[in-house]
Image (tube, rainbow, N blue to C red; front, side, top):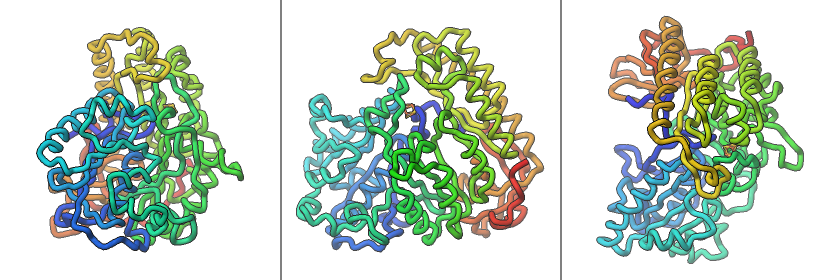
Length: 498
Ligand code: SF4
């Protein structure tokens, strides 16, 4: 079992780095996995062609892939789980870590073979690997037919004749090209069963010295509150029970809008949607975690008691060189306030080990901070320079073996902390939203975002249900339990403020 709380490939600030094929579910070889069920689509007739999408990176990339899938479905293509059957193969790339970039390069290499055997297959690369300077990419991957920026979906028309034929009549595709209006405005998110991810802000105004995201995703741009609320309303009406609001700096939402709104205001508006059981948001920057935002989290019934608050390092000098704009004490103080408002709060954070110049003493500061903070999850990454960033100009002077040693030391520490935290939960009852089956067991997440496996009679279908689970055993990265009942609706849940 892959430990959930130690994920070496981690988007610097946003979400875990995993490569995925956006594949149809078993038994539904060409099912529509996109958001189109949320709208009233008016697709072109099926044209017998197929597409395949491979995605690596954060949930923002997942959302972009869902948009591409929806767009291709609207013009008559069907999704296939295999690149070998596809007329168009789309790779959605990530370069936030060297390891992620290497995976994309490997995948592109294997597609060169496919292109040789099936020259008519169109290969498309999008995501953060694609910059304005595409000459180098063209030389390196000559078999790729199209490179396009994630914000420039119109360029897909260059390899999708059905799109090109629409020319100026793209408004015929209601999902992504129609002017915003009730029932016609674009969906930006994607769903997985009863859970959905909805981007609310794009880009980032911070310039952390190691991070490529602002160069690839641009400055912060918030979506209007009305569009977000209507999208969540449609998702809930379509059976979604849990929504996660996404952004590279999600808690910066609203400051760039004419009305200068705050994430707390948006959370209140989304929480008020009838039928929404759970609401989450990620990823937050510590500088924007205000008392008001924590107070709002504590008050709203659907808001889950989980905080994703990356810290990256526990030493102030390293934080300064990372351009993180806060100190170790400020991060710990924010955590302390959040815990004072939400008794059952769980915390996830991100750490980079082996940043240029990080001494042993500075690393031990990170170690001691994690011991003090006792986070439920720590997403660990070994530093790798990203060309174009400030820190890439500095010597990457920590040898790989030393980075690996520091990584392992924190992994071991977190395994101990995770064991202690989860062992204390044995005998308690937690609410679980069941998302699927894993090795014959139902599994889902608690409100605190802990993975919970549920022992249950095979006859009983728990998929998509909220159930109370009595915890019978614990591992560092997950819990195991048995159904104790069906929880009350969030409106009647017990008060969460201590
Ligand atoms: Fe996060 Fe900093 Fe990168 Fe912005 S620049 S996405 S705040 S790590």
